[in-house]
Structures are given as structure tokens and as C-alpha cells.
Length: 234
Image 1: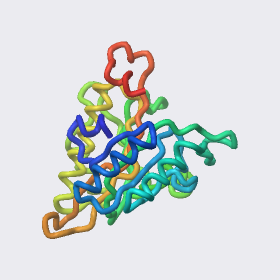
Image 2: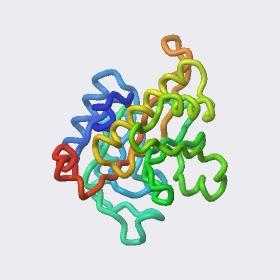
Image 3: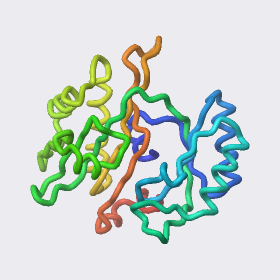
């Protein structure tokens, strides 16, 4: 989220904690700012966190502390970790958002085409492997130009194909263009947003807001020598 926020991508308010006391303090800051509900997520490189109990919605400090304690003192076991599980060392503490619709969005390297490719689907919120297996036609793939990268007209076509409407289109296009820029500038091999969401309409936002709720990055290890800021995130 930090890399997305620095690139200008719309993300909910958030903080990262590596111990229970910091998690509680960051949760208190969000509650004090007027946020009614926050989400606590274990930060591990594996899917299935929600089903494993490592994504919790809380509305008070006591529940926030209990969630943080559970996640930092237990291994996360899911279908992607194997029975040995993974140790959770960091937590994401973030404002929870109401969701009207979820989408999947990513840029990664397509080794068969030998080019970076935008991947998008209107079936977000679940692992893309599941979508690919059950409904491959729901996945859009757009190869990026090796020099020019993602073009605005390509992003607009994808936004319309995904079903974005009204002001949602411009917001979605803006996010696609910005993650394409992050992908190139940070020597990434994957920038994935799952889910990309549209929030319910309200008086201020009659078409809702398009937000990046969760993200996954992978980087080219051979390029880390020129990405010191990225290296500090590990």
C-alpha cells in the first residue's frame, strides 16, 4: 500500500505494525480519527488468509488487540502454505471500506509472450487461479508495448469491458496507468491488486469510489541494487 500510495493510487488509511503494542496504538489512531471499523490483516506471501482467520474486522480496541495477538502468536495455515504454516511478522491495520463490487487487476510478466501484460477480471476478491480454472473467459489480458508501456486507450477499453460506469471509468483508468508506472519504475515482476473495489454510492460520490484494498508485489531480485527503497521494505 505504501508503494501504491506514493504512486498516487487511492488506498484506504493504513499503518503497519510488527508487534501487538504498535498494532493497538495504530488501531486507536484510526478510531480516534472517526473511523468506525478497521481491518487487521496478517502480511504473508500466501493466499487464503481470510479463511485461516488472519483477516479480522474490528470495531473497538479490545477486539483489535485480540486479533493482533492471535495473528502474531500463531502460524497461518492455508492451502497455499502447507501444514507447516507461515509465521506472521507484520500486520496491516487499515480503515475498512464498504464494498459494492470487487475486481481483480494486475500487471505481470507473461513469459510465453515475452512481455509485461495487464490482467483484469470483474471477478475479484478470490484467488485468480480459481477464476482461471472455473471461468477463464472472465480474465482479460492486454500485452503492454515494450517501450511505450500501457496506453490510456487500452486502460479505457479494459475499464469498459469490466463494467465500470460514469466517473468510475476515469478512476479505474488512473489506477491502471499508475500501477503500470510503478511496475516499470520499481523493477517489479508482479503488481497485483485484489480486490480493486467500487464503494457504494453516496451524496459526495454518486458513482462510488474506486479503491485498491489489497496488493501484492514481486520484484526482480537482480534489480534490487538500484531499488534501495524497495529493499528496505523486506
